[in-house]
Image: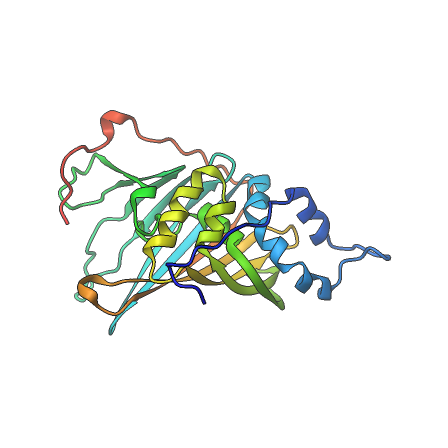
Length: 277
């Protein structure tokens, strides 16, 4: 597989989200009926238009989990919130792991996800409790796929534009909803080429910053072609030339159409001082 030095060219164009609804519609019959065999043949086009289908869906609630493993240490960061796919805006409450004594290491962090930017409150590291920290995602070596402790749900879907091949693994049930399971590997550089403008630079940064530009994934779609669960496995270089850090990021999307009003902080509420390491 290609390493980070490899650059992929060309990306499948996004297909209108309405086609996804037709392909997934239940109860089709006659010569044009969609079969399980055709699901396998349609895997890559379906993955490439996953982000467009979410935009058509509008909004949803989201639950996130990020597991990091380095050496013998493993931590899990969890979050929950809402996302507006049309406005590319999200709000998550992210909880860091407890320390070994059972006490909370940190108050929950509020994160606002916006095109090209990540806002964090209760960031700690010398930042006043009433102030936000603003980070340009294109300046992060991982494009904010990992830094915030939760992968931006829209970026997770955009990453699927980098899928070259995928395997259809059949139907299963997820939280009472029938879904179809696909597995494959996405190329970050290819995903960046096909992504929406506001996601392109962040994914390009990740393609350069991760230990590998290849990202294995598992994704589950409902009968409307909407992502219900997606799991990515990232690998990036550890500090002090340690072994690469393995990260598994899982996002669950549900309650489509839920209110998802996200208000970004005013400039006077953004911290401009030095952030401690």
